[in-house]
Length: 223
Length: 223
DNA sequence: CTTCACACGTGAGTC
DNA sequence: TGACTCACGTGTGAA
Image (cartoon, rainbow over all chains, first blue to last red; front, side, top):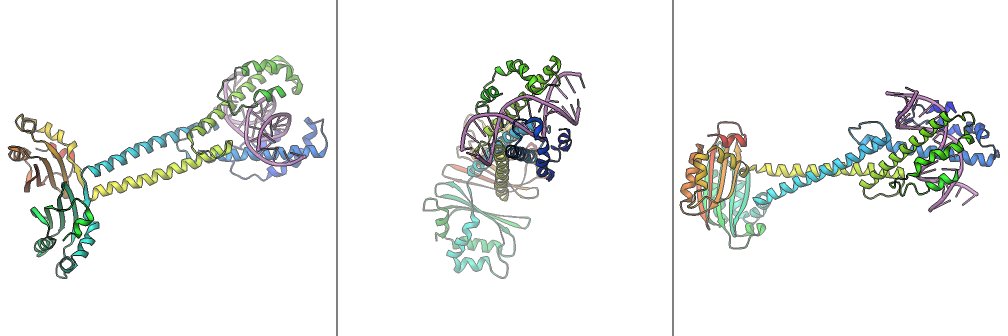
C-alpha cells in the first residue's frame, strides 16, 4: 500500500496534472484484492470493486478540482486548507455582498443627486429644435463664415412653466448676434437674459416662461 | 460495522445536530480493533488510533459544515451535490464579479454625466463658509428679522480658476441687499454678477475667479 | 442489477 | 512526539 502513498504524495499541489497512471492502476489492484477480500475471490466481484474504486477516485478528483477552482477565484486565501478555502470563499461572498450593497447605495445617492437639481440635457432636444426651425436656425448655426460652436446647452426647471436655459459656446465674430437671433427666432417668452463672455467662451442664460405644462420635447417644438 | 452506517445514515441532512454519541463511540471501537488490526492489540496503539479516528471525524464534520455554510450563502443551488455546491459557488462568484463590473460601469457613467456639467454641490461647503466668516455671514444668514432662506446653492467649474456660483433663495424684504453683503464679505474676485427675481424666488449668478487651483474645500475657506 | 454520492477508518506525510 | 491534513479503499443506501 505504500506505493499508493508515494504516487499521490503531492496530489493536492499538482492535482491539475492529468495523471494517466490512474487508469492503469485498477489492473495492479487486482493483485491486491485477495489480501483483504478473502470471502469473494471471484473475478466478477473484484471487477465491480475495481470499478467502484476508480469511480470513487474520479469523484474525489472532481471534487478537488472544483475546490481548486474555487480557490482560484477567491483572492487573499489565508491557508491552503480545504476547510479554509471554503471558509474564505464564504467570507469573500459576504464581502462581495457588502460591496454590492455599498455601491448600490452610492449609485442611488448619485441618482438622487442628479434628481435634486433636475437639469435636463438640452443636447438631445437640439435636433428637434433645429428641425422645427430649419428655415432660420439651421443656417444660423451652420453658417459657413463662423458657425456657433456649441459647448454646453441645458435647461433647468425652476418653477412651474419657468425654465432657465443656459448655453455655452465658443466666442467668434458675430457669435453674440447670432445667438440672439437664434433665441429670438424661437419666439420664447423671455423674462430676463444675460450674456457673459470670458476666455474665449460665451455663456447665455435666459429665463423663459412656457404656456404649456412641462414637457421637454414639446417645449422646443413650440414655436 | 453496520451500526455505524445506521448512526450516520442521515449525516448530511442533519449535520448541524451535535451528536454526543460520537465521543462514546471510541470505547465501542476497542472491541472491533482486533478485527482488522491484528498486529497491534496493545491498548496504547489502539488509543492512538481511536484518537486519530475521532480527529478525522471532526475534520470531516468541520469540512461538511463549511460546505453547508457555503451552500447557505449561494442562491439557486442546482443540486445538493458536494461538487455541485462548489461549482455553483464558483459560478455565483463569477456572477457577482460581472454584476460588480456592470454596476461600476454604471456608476462611472453617472459620475461622468455629473462631470459633464460639473456642478459641485455647495451645500456641504456652506458650513465651512459659514464657519470661516462667522463674524459677518452667520448673523446675516440667520438674522431674526428676515433670514436668507436658501433653496439651492452650487458652483460650476467653467475654466481653470473660473467658476459660476448660482444661489437660489426665497425673496423677502432686504434679501437682495443681504445677499450682496454676503458675497461681498467673501472678498471674491467677481467678473460679472446677475440677480433675477421671479415668483417669490431670487437667483443670483456670479462669475468668480480664484487665484488657487481648484479645490472645493479650500475655495471657501479662502478670504 | 448498476450507478452514484456519501461517510467511514486508515496509513502516510507534514509541522 | 503529538496534532493536523490528506488520499485512499470500502461498505452502504438511494436512484
